[in-house]
Length: 146
Image 1 (spheres, one colour):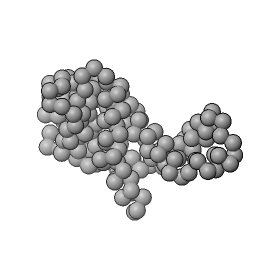
Image 2 (spheres, rainbow, N blue to C red; image 1 turned 60 degrees about the vertical axis):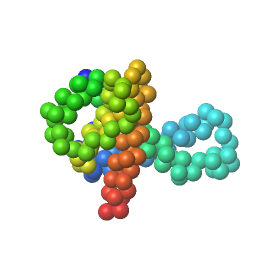
Image 3 (cartoon, one colour; image 1 turned 90 degrees about the vertical axis):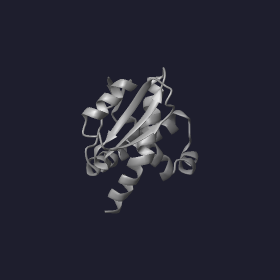
Image 4 (cartoon, helix red, strand yellow; image 1 turned 45 degrees about the vertical axis):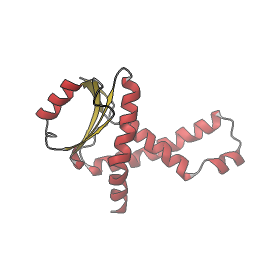
């Protein structure tokens, strides 16, 4: 089993804290990207909206999530031996593919998994976006409301 990523939040609070911490990073990334694209001040003000910065923060958060990659047998063994044995497992991709990328979300009692054949980096990125959209977006919105 291979593990990639740096952040595996155990609680919704930990996820929300990291998400908030990434706000300044997202602003810098967007500003520097706009600078590299030679935006002048007017174009920057027109095109760089709060939604653009929020999208950068969402993507940055997702890309930091820990993802495990292995063959299907290793995933099944991990699932059986982990505290996620009875969790909701969201399976994406094809049942006819040999390898699995997955991300457990303890506070949601959920595992998001996707299959892949030979592109682990693409699978990890796809999985992270799926985990963000299916679990983290709602958890972050709920944490923000409280």
